[in-house]
Length: 144
Image (cartoon, rainbow, N blue to C red; front, side, top):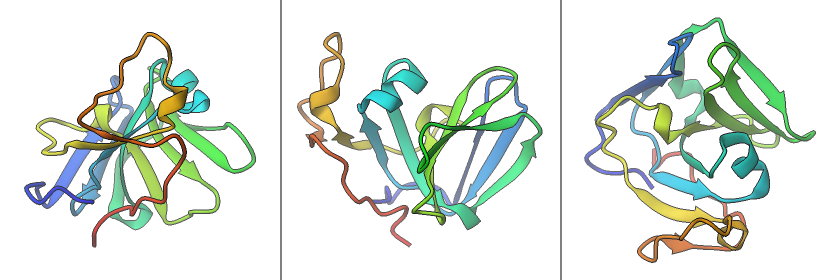
């Protein structure tokens, strides 16, 4: 689901600006993933929007590195500052999840879903106003 008030494009990047990107068109609303791999790679949970790969334009990517978490999942991060930036699955080559915290504000996005809610760490309280499922769910990359 795309937020209707989202502007025509968004931009973002890592803390040191070694990676900068722009998204053509509106990104999907934010989903929080509480699965163990996402918790470990981010230090809390993955809050991510998404876009079609062809809609993400890199303005700088000199420090972008990819970590193969498994044979089917990769996390993109900055090799200089360590910012977690992206998530992608090899079986969805046209889909790129983008960590919401790396978007320039204001984003105009809202969080609409929590995935793997049963895996949320014991220190974290899930938001009762956000739909929570205890598994993954097929989400559209955008409403386009």
